[in-house]
Length: 189
Image (cartoon, rainbow, N blue to C red; front, side, top):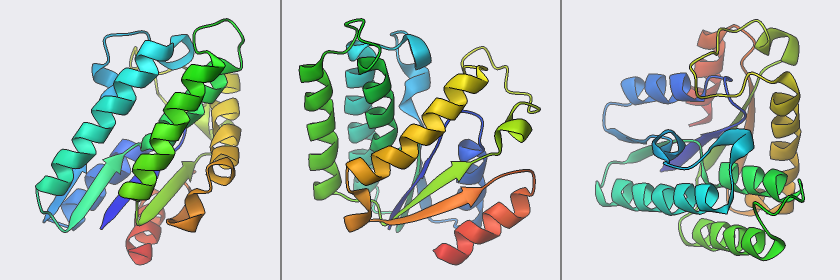
């Protein structure tokens, strides 16, 4: 089984991944590759960023499959890349062209058809609660507008890319009661 945690920055995806892999000992975690990317990330990303993250994410998922662990847990998914690619493309500043966006999204759809996630957990946080969290790690954007835009775009991308045709989508509200969030994920599995 392969599961993914998606959502904007600072919603608890990495924490949930770690908790799930502790709960299910024979699991393999695919860490988010964007933190290793040598190119500008988040709001400053461009085509090189998104292509690098896409290729490294696919390779990491392939290596996870080869591990033969019965549970693969991905911290972010290819859907995250589609979200960032679309938003950067829509700035119209040329960092990602329409052709580049189509190439990235086509690759994501094809990979998803080849090796779909069994469950995708879309983690969200109420914006007022999100603003109170200590998220300053020097990497993530602390801009509430960017957080809100990303969250909305995840909702649209799930529909646009028709992810639900092969994957069970779950929305998890992580507004401070982490134990309940974790129980919701475990019960879905």
